[in-house]
Length: 359
Image 1 (cartoon, helix red, strand yellow):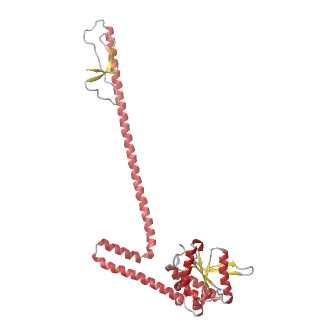
Image 2 (cartoon, rainbow, N blue to C red; image 1 turned 120 degrees about the horizontal axis):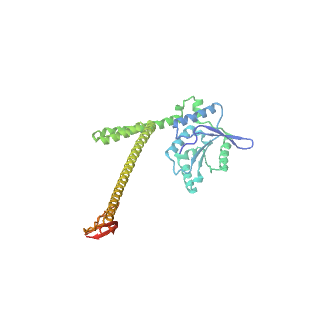
Image 3 (cartoon, rainbow, N blue to C red; image 1 turned 180 degrees about the horizontal axis):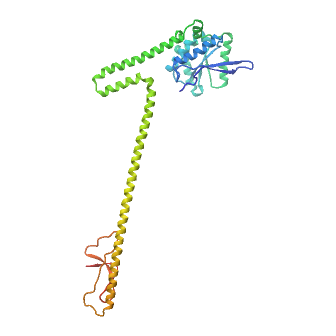
């Protein structure tokens, strides 16, 4: 979840017909986009500036979501920093309020509230020093009840936080304050934790020098990933842009090659179809020419027979023309296929339709 408050902001709340209340919203620790040091500096600047201007706080409201099943490490660190910043003397002016009851089973909320109340490391210690436990039910009524509780307590006394007194009255730097030293300690623990991990990885690396090159490379990569963690995002972004361009170029080249191959295949198919068409046309021309020659030949023989009175005694002449077909089939065994014969005179016949006869 991204943190909502990024800087200190003030809001005016109409408390009554004659009185307004200034609500101050401050960024919390464990922020998504900023370090705890930056958050502490932001809050310290506003707190010291108002304190120097003799503007005192009437009360403080600390909000915690009751929907969390347990107090996570970040929330505990946030609460600890809040306690160090405010100090024990400010506890009577602090309201510890739970939120998000509408998103939580009521009985579960009661159990978690009881745990917060009874655990010293949570809210138990602050409650024992005068802080109050409140509920915000996400409506105006509960919000005004919470503000009224703070305002009524603030009428009798104003609150000065430890951070304000230490930096303004005692002239301490932020790092010298209780909150600053506590944060420095947490940062030191974090650095020691990371250093311990780095040392552990380095020891493992020395032990793996005798192992295969592949295993040693994995350990080196793990150490590099840890030590270069702050610059990792920028490198990954640059690599992603380069890889995206290379992938685009490779894919474009593949598509061009596929297009050329498809065009070549289409051209080859068209050429084959053209050759087949030309072969068919050539066969058709040859068949038509052969038929014309045969018809002319028979016509001449017919004319010759009509002009000659003598009747030849030889066997009548028969000319057989093979059938024309685009897909000729071989004749059945023992039979031949010829055209039918029409007698022109006693010695000549005219070739007609195709008809099989037995040998």
